[in-house]
Image (cartoon, rainbow, N blue to C red; front, side):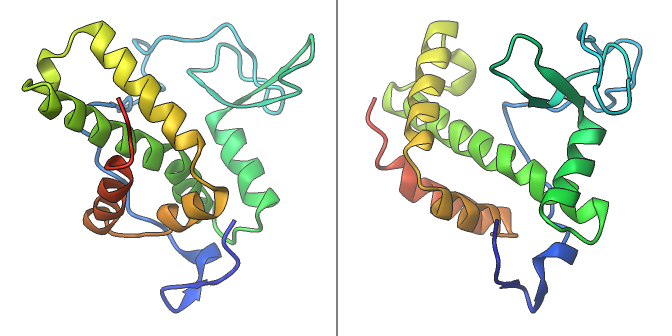
Length: 170
């Protein structure tokens, strides 16, 4: 986690703007009865059939412990010393969304390289491009990822990610 000042104040108070994604959609309301549920119970708040897993403890054990998204945010806030839940939620969301945004840019590059639109890619092409993107992102250092996550403006973030995309080999 960043230890420097961010935009003139502690990052622990900073709420980052949400990254807009084109191809990866977030549920608008996970509490909707229509939203699919897991069969998992949150080990902290005991919510049954959590909408999606926010975190896992003891993931490699026979009895992993699942966290709902709200409890995962609460733990992240405490673990990293955030002063507000909103700031913790925005920084935690960035951990995932920067990778999703990079994958979207890689999908677009793959489609362009193959004279297609992203919407015209087959499931196999989509999966292959995402696998390449995920494998590539796993090679990016933790420090570099933290720097990317701290970029507040999406346009600026996309410029940095486009430079990374140029290094991806299909």
